[in-house]
Image (tube, rainbow, N blue to C red):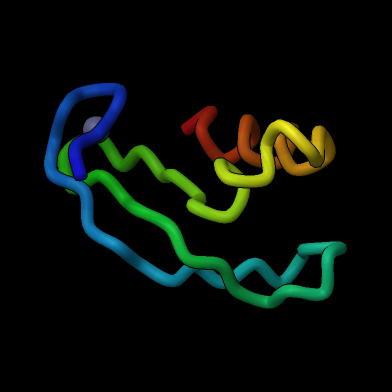
Amino acid sequence: MSCPRCSGFMVSQVFEDLRSDTGELSFKGFRCMVCGEILDAQISSNREHRPHHQARNRKLMSY
Ligand SMILES: [Zn+2]
């Protein structure tokens, strides 16, 4: 797994999301060791069907 932003090394990680309105308190994703980019595996897979999650993903990736 390489970062789409900087091609750096990414590690799988479970993130806690206490403000989620979906009832899920954590989600699995990838974090870039170089630039800190975060990819949410669940949001990525649901992006086309659930636009609401796309907005949340964009907020995370703004860092
Ligand atoms: Zn990166």
